[in-house]
Amino acid sequence: MIAVERFPVAKSEIEDAGDQRFADRMATFYQSELVRRFRETGLFSRVVSLSDTDFPTGSGKALRLRGTITRLGRGSQAARYLVGFGAGSTRAQAETHFIDAESGRVLIATADRRMGSMGLFGGDSEDFLRESFDNMARDLARFVSRLAATAPATPSGPSADLKWPPVGSSYVVSERTSGSYGFGTRQQTTTFLGERDWQGKKALAASDGSVITYLDARRRILARVAGDTLIESFEPYSVFVDWPIFVGKSWRNRYRYHDHARGRSFNDVQTDCAVEAYEDVVTPAGTFKAFRIALRGVSHTTVLWYSNDVGFVVKTRSERWANHYLGRGVNETELLSYNLNQ
Image (cartoon, rainbow, N blue to C red; front, side):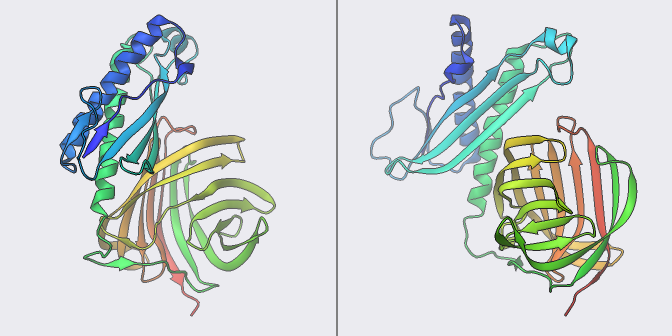
């Protein structure tokens, strides 16, 4: 069973009685959408609203869904008209905690944020915020469904555990870019360098000749550096693959991102990641059996194909959407050749 509480709106978002009435309507709507969406999953024997009933006693194993609406902005049509570039957008953000009802222990914590521009000359802000909260409830229910799908400890099909190519191994990819990635094509060679020092700690490194990528022992990305210049970094790391992998496994990747080259930082970047298939992938370097892994965020999506036969990714497609801070763009790579330094 899961019992859904009514999420209060943060006091910082309320200035007067009108704001309070609006906040009450949105909190009630969000609670009702969470109840509806979790009932649709079929995961729980009961889904109850704690605005309609007290917490049921003797309910056995149960969860409480508790949280706060931390951002609630109705936006400004004037700002959209006079400023543009996302000014005046509606904003909704909620933090959630799944709590074991018996022990009070927080099992899962999430955060989600949505924006809507509504156009320059119209659009009802309450309608757009209702749509945002509905989408947030839908995606939270989907996330929990994916977690439930990974419950079996032993996969029924092919699986792959963490693997590193031998030091000195290299591969060559073709890269095609457009939009915010720049326009053009090029070839790029990446070489596995083995263990290196990174900020006083041991890390593993790979270089494309000008940029070194540092990864931890679980192959999670720490940073990218050009010479002595830090380009980007991830706190504590970015998990593009959560080992071991098998079809149906999913995880949420959360980190603080720093774009040092542009002086930008983002506190809570989130991507929902899933292994979607195990399939044949044709590249100029040959045909590989590979796991198709999708990483989906609010402003970008990356799909990559990882082959355990060679120990690296053989094909990728990354797409930034219009709401990405750098704008729309597409980056595609595929393997041209490789050399495993046996």
